[in-house]
Length: 258
Image 1 (cartoon, one colour):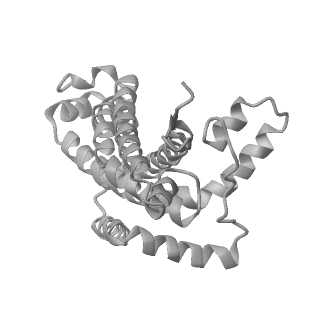
Image 2 (cartoon, helix red, strand yellow; image 1 turned 30 degrees about the vertical axis):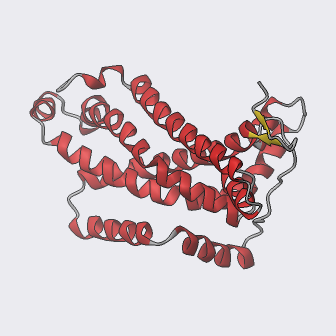
């Protein structure tokens, strides 16, 4: 019940402790990707400015093709001399495995200050992890917005509604965003792999450090548990995307809903 495996040597392996720390980074990166990708994707889908659309798409392709390791090294090289952002994380023991949840569920009085301090440590890894999901979000949203705007029921709504904002809010977005959110979870394998690399390079507790330590010590049983943990994270994020889509718009499965 405590989320621990006990090996024959007596060593205890904290499964939930490591898993929750990785899930935290994945969810925060997905949240940032939605905040950044939704407005840009809607703008690209509705905009007719060709040079601006081409510039944004070219920038997205360049960032997406950049290897995650090279991107981390470039960001660390740029951030370290200019900003007071530390890349050394607090890996002290936690019953939950993620410092944010530990702070929220604790009885401490200065929760706000502690949360700000932890976000100060997490901001660089979250930004790096959110780059590729943001690009995928922009591409999916812009493509779905373009396809939806060409449907007949959107054209009929444009005749009845005089305000473009009402068309966007009542008809276009409810038929576009809920169908896009489950598609974003299809790339969770890449996001999880990037999260593990970030955990290794930033020396943060998680599946990355777990697998690396097990490989160095030839502890292949822990690697097997890590594979189970990866499948758990992918299943959890996929289920979370489906639940979010249904919660936002329950009628998304009805075609041509106005």
